[in-house]
Image 1: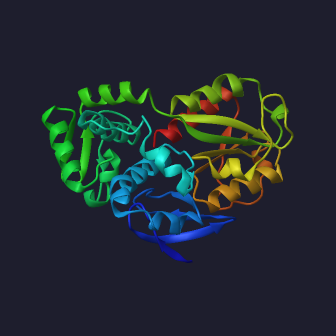
Image 2: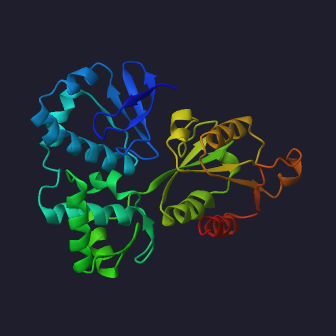
Length: 297
């Protein structure tokens, strides 16, 4: 795979080409993720005056980091950079920059006092839209003194006070996309949409029912929808080949899959496959408890 230097964080990372865009993967702008830059913009940005790059590029890096951390896709060109850097959403004051760090910790933890690792700090000052590591360290010390977070080396924890402030400024956590795969929605009890899907939502996921045959309550299969999901629930009731295919595609992308099957169909499943060990359910209430226990792990 080709590698190229990210213009915004200076790391050399793998890239993939898609039409007129290059996808930069795993740099400090999007650890574990990616962003796309119009290929023709690369030389344009490189030719910016030094002072413009000094004032702008770290802000663009922080913007990409924040958006992709929120599971938003980032596709940009050189023409977008001025509007990004001058957006009213870019924090300017130290207080606003500190709040961005609190929000990051909030998105990555489930409760006050839960540890979030940030390592190395030298690659993470874009979390606060800061131009350098020194400012990030200053913000951390300020937040610690204000009893908003606790730092132990590379481990960070929100205090009760910090959690409350982060929750208020973040406006609540964004639910992670979850796809529920079924062969035929008409084979499912009505309680699925009344009991099971709301239970999944309580655990931070936004479930979308996807059926091979589209109905009023479901969408049809889409590999793009699967790829954007953070969790897959694949129900094997009815032995739909489409469910196996879509869930297998998710496994290939390292997306967690929870397999389920109605007890009436459990004996019809093919021989045991290591990756497919479905939870057997009789009622939606029973399955909701099983899913709850699985998500609690």
